[in-house]
Length: 134
Picture 1 (cartoon, rainbow, N blue to C red):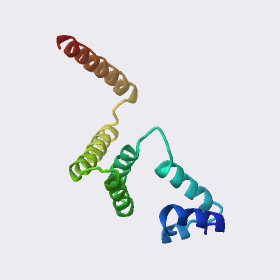
Picture 2 (picture 1 turned 45 degrees about the vertical axis):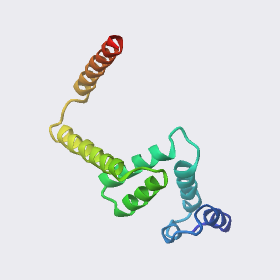
Picture 3 (picture 1 turned 90 degrees about the vertical axis):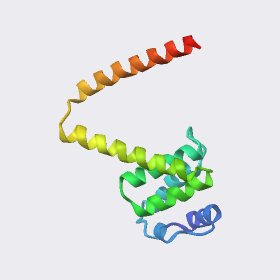
Picture 4 (picture 1 turned 180 degrees about the vertical axis):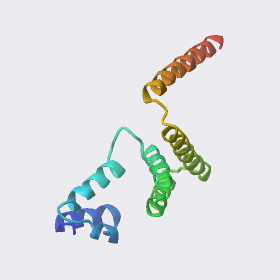
């Protein structure tokens, strides 16, 4: 249960104290609100739009209907379109798909890192060549 001060802050921020926040065990309840508040609503390096899209992708990949609903609503508040939401979910699924393949086939991480570095270098060269052609 959150302290009285935290309860007041949550009500000021959200208009109510969501029931699930009442289920947070001490001593983590006030701290949990701080993490939620600071990362979700605070000024960070990511825009609210970027944070919401990340939230949607993670929620979909972790198959959490609560988080999926929350982050989709958060994204809509940040003017994310339905098409962009679909793309974020598809990207999350694609990442999870390939992660399963990499883990299941026990691909060597060092080899993967080396190959990725080579791919990035190639793509950078292609972008530079394309920019020079303009």
